[in-house]
Image (cartoon, rainbow, N blue to C red):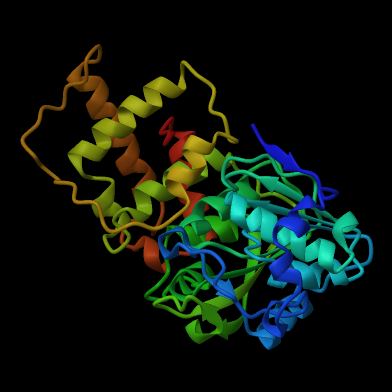
Length: 355
């Protein structure tokens, strides 16, 4: 259950008075970190302190008067303060750490902008977000993939997300077919959104300094959703990109995979998929290393309740779908979404299901 922290609780400002007074390094307008509590690097608590970069993030976000803005992981409020000072109507910040909740609330109170701020103390991956027009955030590295999955494949409708991400993750996110970084993450995100790299940010602009640099990206959901069962698409790309450097012909001839798809296809006849289920979405949006799968592990072609002839006929349907296109010799890492989607439709037309 979400715990909404009222923006009117100015008692936070009193509890953190040293944040708002005393030295110049702890003034409301300062981004400098005064070390008043320990930052946990394993939790992704790296504060962006370079004012030039903070200003650039807000500028790239192109916020409009009246916007409702969502910020995830506000920290002590360096970015939040700039969002509040912009012409937006309201900012909702989602933060799990009580100390950060108090710090960002105190920051807003000191700037006399607390009426524009609501803080939700909760896990951002689990919390229910209010309606918002734009998401602007310095994302904790550990939740980048599930958060983007939640934004793009959940029920939220928004104009743009301007996100500061780990540079390596951002490079995978914006990769295109043929790039060495191209992967399941990029294919899935590009099915529903346009993605653009905006700028790189040095690790030296953070406190404590992380091990890697970051990059700012823009994600714009497409106005029209693709004509495809998204849960089925996500499960399909999981199978393809689990061994993205093998050809599709090699991937879908493996005995273990054929048997697994046969079982799934039989289950599909007895249930209805849920395209909004987080268990499906979060499990398949991101990239992973190749999954070893033996083409002939000596196992039987039998499936409980079905004859070997039924399994053999299913195997022939897979082969027929591949042979009807020129895609069998292609590798997923070099294929466009249109090509992958055409193969998925051929599979589905032959009763081959992936979820």
